Length: 492
Image (cartoon, rainbow, N blue to C red; front, top):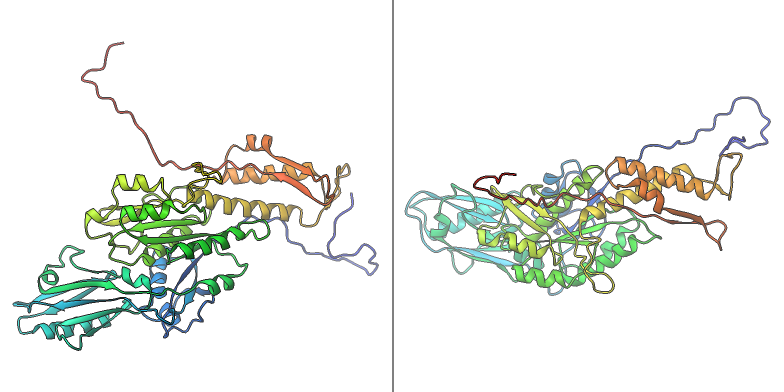
């Protein structure tokens, strides 16, 4: 049987030993990339719309207190070893405005207390005493806010009302409206902020940046989990169209976007029910202390971390904690079991709160209906997307390593190296599938072998056509128990 060589020619006559070095078939390893899209400030050194690998120096890259710097901090806290990229966007120009709110010291203190405020989740504690006027307290509050590391707003005493502190988001756009000013989020904060101050929540933020250039600059690189801060219909649709092409056979780069929106349960269901894409997952919140872009960053980071490789990528994300994320202050603003049940039939994901910790309850896509408009749960679970991504890349790597350069024949009776038949390819597919079954990605390899079709194309002699049925490993999400109570077990 002739030995196959890639570099040593068959007619070489110069002696003596010639070693040709080729890469053998190596175990497959997967790297899942997380990419954060968000706004920088003018102080950030990073080039707008250009992807950037980030391991540190987020404040220098994106500007201290910028949306994107805050997203990176939350993402890194949730996925300490994750490969994280960022695409900074400049604030929109023209009529774009920053959200504004205020804290007014309406009553002067009569004793030594601390005014404790939470702005966008950042805790501000301001000691005051009976000798301070309302204006003195306002000055102290503004100074404390501006001194808080990484805070996403700036503060200034109002030029007309000396007891009023104006709060302004550092980035322009609608997402600044989700930066809430809260009190009493933790035991021990005291009620001084409620008694002494009057709070006006941030509003008026308008004009979000366009993502067209950012998408173009992502090119054909691998982007697996994309955190999209703008849960706006047109923006999500634009990204979905791009992702749809990446899942096509000419690209095969894959990817999935994760976002978050703020609204009542009715608002959420109205929005998500009208969508139908397996490329998008939406985590809704209502009156959360932190803006939605931080929720999206935390969910995206945990998803990327847990779906890095099997067998973990087949396990559900339920009970996974979102590190650094605070639940809504009012229990009534946290999603009930009934609301979450309704969400999971209308394309919205959900969280739960356990002992003050925010946990993922279920992460699903917005895909709900097939092309005929009939209910379809084929791509309901994000685990399915992760399994497809990993499984297809694994099979591609296996097949290209096994047959990197092969001649195609109907039969190979002499077992020539570098030659392949349809049966050889079929056996290779079966072996790759069994390996994925061993890793807990797919199952039922025996039935797969029966259903698999690999045949030479009748019109193109250089082409082999394959039907590849994939049986995904499912997740234990519901354990139904009929607990029947008897005063006394009946006798047989």
